[in-house]
Image 1: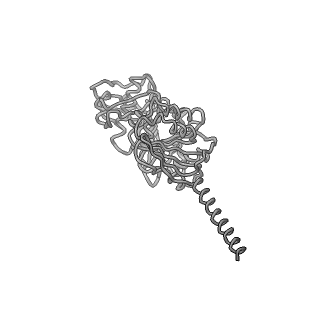
Image 2: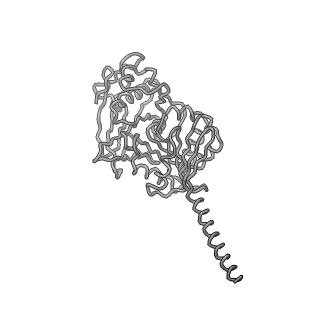
Image 3: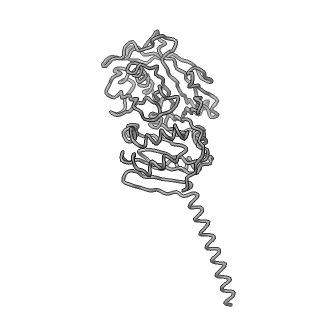
Length: 356
């Protein structure tokens, strides 16, 4: 009997120990937990151990509203199975399961950090997470929060080191797209409408900056705008371009996306446009001062005066292209003229009114 009890106890111990090891391994491989400090909250799914891969680089620009799944797969696949970091200043962990398990892309982990204030921008734990990420995604929200929290801080330095030295893939939606160009609309004083911007390009709400922030190749002379199916976006975006030409003396360029539409720029500067066309009217726009016109600057771009940028009704040359599920429409950012799947248009501004 004693021998039988010993055998039984030994068997039970093996079963219990095996279950404990299996549960411990599962917790290590696929935890879902949150950590909170005074300055930020972090949510994580996936492995607790860092995995170093060789990411493929690139930039994903998403126009807002619900993310396009195919564009997000493009973004995640370029992390090459590594660790994805979501940075935001509002909301919670809504991206974690979507990225980690819903799209069928193999990833080591997904972690969301919600910044509560600017103090977190020098937090060593936060910096360590950025320094180990193969992909960084900026959620929607308020771009002025992103700029005021991160610009000229160790967080911005770490992000740019990842882009330039580790070839991480980067992207964002809505406000997260708005901060991707070297030039960006800060919204420091609040949002501006197209009518306000066109009627006075130097309105207090037209706040354009090129102070070093996010350093993306192929976007050094670009300003972006989002939610472009909103009729109140195009006119203000053109005003931003006029200000860039007038104030900085550059051949400014613009990239814009409708909601549910994405421009995915690979490491060679080829932009692929994803969306729901032909079932849905999802568009992206590549806007530039008409290169066929010499000295193409606005006729009137002054404080308190309506914008005039006419040039015989051809001031701006615009490539309008629909995003598709298979991403078979492209635009080459190396020359800003080689493209397929869309059409060239001319836009101009007459006495503070945008004409298409």
